[in-house]
Image (cartoon, rainbow, N blue to C red; front, side):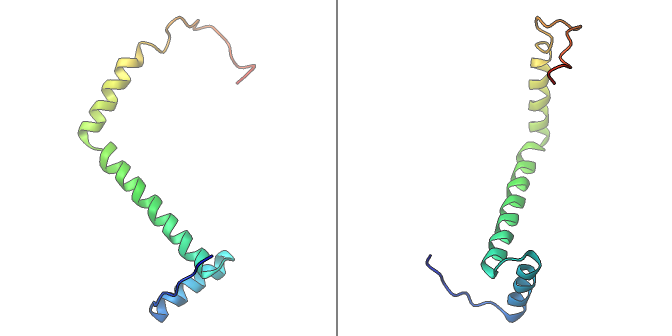
Amino acid sequence: MATTTLKVPVELRDRLADQARRRGTTLAGAIAHALEVAEEHEFWEDVRATMCTPAARQELTAESERFAGTLMDGADPAEDWSDIL
């Protein structure tokens, strides 16, 4: 595996080392974990920014209403699935 050297302030290196020690990993592992957390946070921020707008909520509500009538299409309301669920 190719490696590289990063110059970081001593305080940052010490914080990374502390995280690595607590997680039982290497500095690279601590950096990778921090990046994964940041990427996941960014993903969910993007989701909230696009799915939580008034227009998106209105579209989801309209779609739910459009399909609500299909929930019981041909289904017997007395049918019992408890033996397999």
